[in-house]
Image: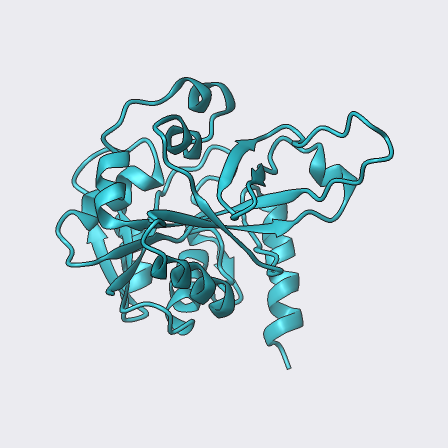
Length: 244
């Protein structure tokens, strides 16, 4: 089973312009993400998909592979699908370009679930620790069935604890997706679905078209850089983990 990691890398970002070129201890953020993904040893191939020369150069300076987009894209999934169309692969993994510290154990577990032929798409989730995160709409929550397949994704706190004595465990959706290539190509051709438009969550398009996402639990707390303040968190994480 050939598995390829594709890292969509868009230059523009509303809340943090040019963030993928921000310096993270001597290397651009996108280079850190590429090198971290490669270092997991999980994938047969790792490639960055971009439409910007500076991002391409940052990756190529590390000896990395780049696919240069020829089209405008609304989402990372659309961007990687353009690259995936010409690749010989069974599983395509969408690794977020702004998450520079990838975890080999989590990614290995993610790929392993495809041994079950019923699994066509999978993603990661981690327990949410802290009430503030549960009610934060930027933290996407997921609920699953008894077999670990997604029931719903939401920016709202789901499940809602109507009985104060209940103590639900909340899970945060970590936006790394693994697709069978055929499903990725089909998914990016579908129209945006009603729930997707309401919550602004593209994974709801899968649910509304009858596909459940196999969710894989991880304790790894991904560091995603969405705003400039997040870069400080990433620097602190890097210093704690990698500095002697």
